[in-house]
Image (cartoon, rainbow, N blue to C red; front, side, top):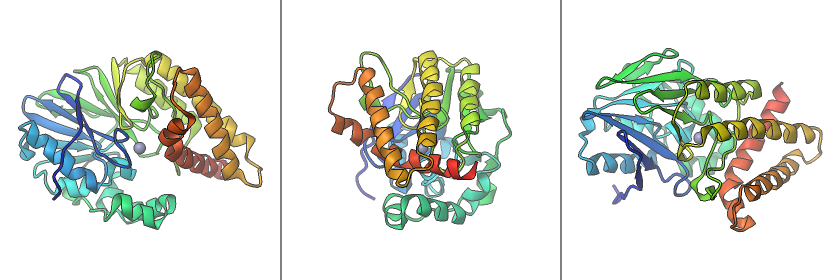
Amino acid sequence: MPEAAPRTTEHGDGITAIDTDLLRPIFDASHLVVENGAAALVDCGANSSTPLILATLEQKGIDRASVEYLFLTHVHLDHAGGAGLLMQSLPNAKAVLHPRGAPHMIDPSKLIKGAMAVYGEESYFEQYGNIEPIPGERVVVADDGQAFSLAGRELRPIYTEGHARHHYCLADSFSSSVFTGDSFGLSYRELDTDNGEFIYPTTTPVHFDPPKAHEAIDMVMALEPRQLFLTHYSKVTSLTRLAGDMHQRLDDFVTIARNHQYDDKRTAAMHESMYDYLIGEIRDHGFTGTDDEIREVVSKDIVLNSMGLEFWLDHQ
Ligand SMILES: [Zn+2]
């Protein structure tokens, strides 16, 4: 195992963000919640993230046997790709999943096929390697709103469709937080300015559903959280403004998709419009770096978002 040096951020209330180091630094987070010696993880990156998560536990003096839950907001591989491998090192952990997601962690064959279709075979293997299944007896199917006790601290999965039909957000009333997976968009710390955090939706294939994506934002806000923890990337706090921006940008992405629906070179045209749109919005937000710096941060999302929007256009 290579020498692992995890990049972590302490957020108080026993919450730590662990950079899974997937694709680039501060892109993809796993969150650790510790209460009275008991631990839970929310999302876990890919196989290559496992040593970083285990090293964080060791640094913090948390016994691997004290990890009781691995909450997987959904089974997209940047959130759950490393779950099977990680579970092999967490002897007492149960993986908690939405009923539609659970079967795909027990038998990941469909998940692998789907991911290869999205990423291409070569970069799929490069990023995700061999996906290990989770034994069925270690998977817990969560009801909507079911309370899981972490040393008395209540953690509740809340079903939120829109990004994926098998997605949940995890509510933590103790810290007044919600771990939102991909239901409340992407907010990269590189794009923070004096105006605060910048946010935009993720519309990846194959379940993107605009009305349900709007509904998910309202469901998160209805919990009246003080802060959210996004997988991409970690804590955001200007929630009223960010919810408004999410609603607006969801509509704008859908408009861009519709504008290009019948174009000859639809994919390329959508990429260009999404770059123009996001660069404009990020500039309005007060970002002073170069266009190339913006492109570097948003390029992967633009490809995946276009793919999801095109799939949605073709299957309405
Ligand atoms: Zn994601």
